[in-house]
Image 1 (tube, rainbow, N blue to C red):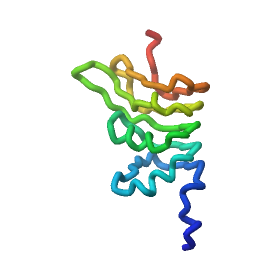
Image 2: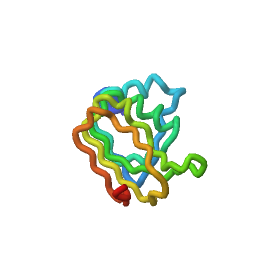
Image 3: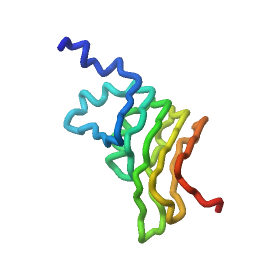
Image 4: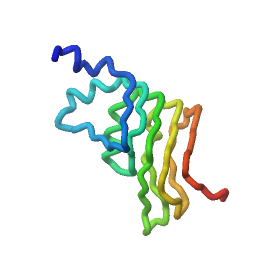
Length: 127
């Protein structure tokens, strides 16, 4: 394949099928830094945790994110935990699909500059 075929610097939009999780390997930082111009990421499966945050920090200019939140709750603190997203300073549109059951109060961390937020299948109580 020609080198230009694998040129990730030009990649702006990515769609992932079938609830795939992703990991941008730390030992391959040279290639993952090329994703800094990514504009749109669609349907990765994300969960609360350090790995998710590390991966998303490699997409600093992300403007649109459509994702699936995988269920994670902490019985000790009695909170549903969701991925931390408040550091995505360019994020304008966030659409989240959730297939779990809200058991406890939710601990969300969304960017303050968000213009559009869509929550699907959260079954959040009015309280």
